[in-house]
Amino acid sequence: MRLSLLVSVLAFLLSLSVAGVSFAGSLLGDGDGDTIDSLFDNCRDTSNTDQRDPDGDGCGAACDGDYDQDGLVAGSDFLVFRASFIAGTPLGAGYNENADHSGDGIVAGSDFLIFRAQFGAGVPGPSKAAYRNLTACP
Image (tube, rainbow, N blue to C red; front, side, top):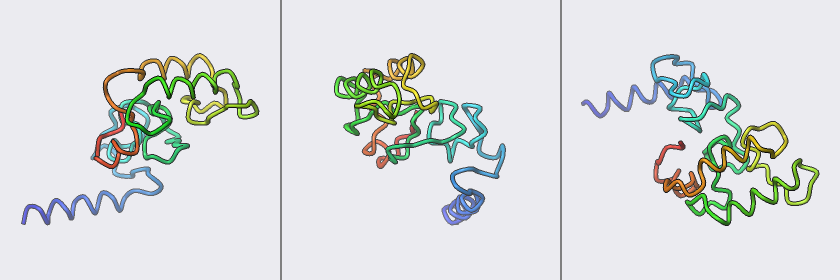
């Protein structure tokens, strides 16, 4: 009985969602202050009102430094970031949209600070594997 009630409540809350934005307001909470309820937020601890997710792994670019989807933010991801930083904009060779954490169209110092905070943090990714295992995007 309790399980069916819980399923009904969750189904109702999900029905209030349109394009990942909840209309349930404060029922679910917004831990990062970006106006997206935590249940639908693809970066729960990082404000990202645009919910941009260029690699489509379910984790927003604002908190996803795992460019190669191996579950770690490590050396291989740094090489991708470095190439994107040198390229600067989408017109430059080596640019990777995932490295533009701020979503301003330029990979610059502010993006490096976001990436650096994730580098070697011990918490994987977030990667597709982590997302499939229901690990929340940070």
